[in-house]
Length: 252
Image 1 (cartoon, rainbow, N blue to C red):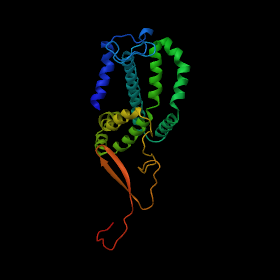
Image 2 (image 1 turned 30 degrees about the horizontal axis):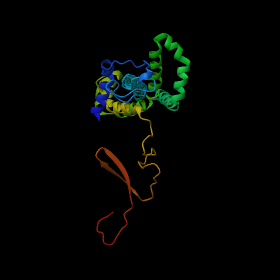
Image 3 (image 1 turned 45 degrees about the vertical axis):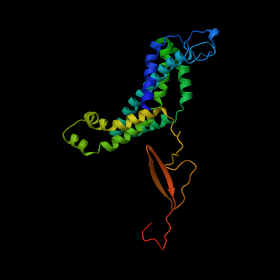
Image 4 (image 1 turned 60 degrees about the horizontal axis):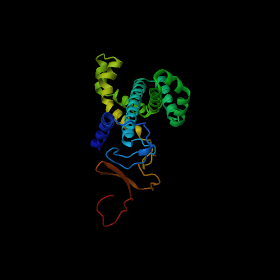
């Protein structure tokens, strides 16, 4: 829930300032100890405090996630807005570039970028900041494509709306139309897409064939798709075709 998420974020942000045990000190006399007042979550095989290491690692994970999401949203909005407001070869080239990035594998590219640029960035920004920048650039650079496609579709729809045409008739420039009228109305789906950027596409149990059926289910001829909502969940089920009967006075 939202409360648990806020508690976790507050714990990893404030926790290292409260729980000041060193995360890299090795103490073989306290290795693999059970939870106690000294070590609330115990220690690992090197005698290091697990709670302190979790709090420190959580800050890094949240920082990487937020930085990568910010980069993905910024690049995706920029590319999608340009493609959505342009026509002809500009839109074609940007969508070709988006498809190209969609085909790139993330893990091999991350390893290749680290191998090529790790020493240079470590010499310029230090070991931790250099690796952090590499990971953020690769993850954010491979997460902007769904945002760009969504923004492009939103711009295609919004640029033909009456309020945008009215602004255009009053002499508003294209940047003013984007910033004042189109982009604010497209931010809702963009924020949702940015929040879902961490989840892997196709990880759910529903198929992506476009018919809304679970994977492995086939739609028989004559059947009907029914959408049923249970709280916040939406399910799809098949309804068999209605057979006519002499006793029925209603139509199927």
